[in-house]
Image (cartoon, rainbow, N blue to C red; front, side):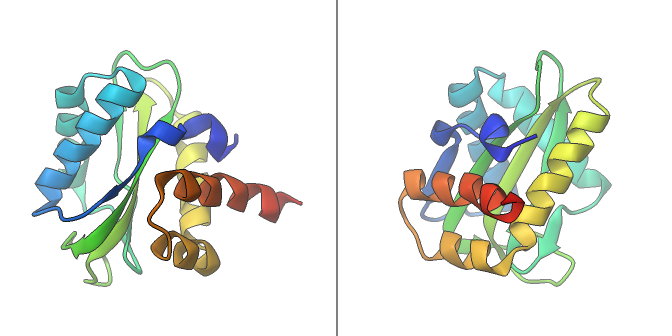
Length: 154
């Protein structure tokens, strides 16, 4: 599995200010609605439901919200870089400015876990997160994310 298979360039955005985690999830729902033709309200609700089980802020300013949605045929992702970090109840209590969301088909077990592990490994790489924070262009951010995996695999 490659990040380029999960993340379309149109699903990468730089966002100025988000007032709350709830608003962030709404923005993610709208983004996957336009990019992948998903039901934005269902995506929002699924993210909220998953987050109620426990925060998906993994530390160091990174969050990996994820949810399962009916009607999907494969795992898809969306990435937001926030100009102003938002409180995310992260394990290290630090606000989040890098958000990589994953949406998986309702019945996908292994693929969802593989995608989550792949994104987690990528977002733990400090050189990748530094590059993401240093760029404001969505196309460049997509390239950084998709090239990071290729460079590690080489």
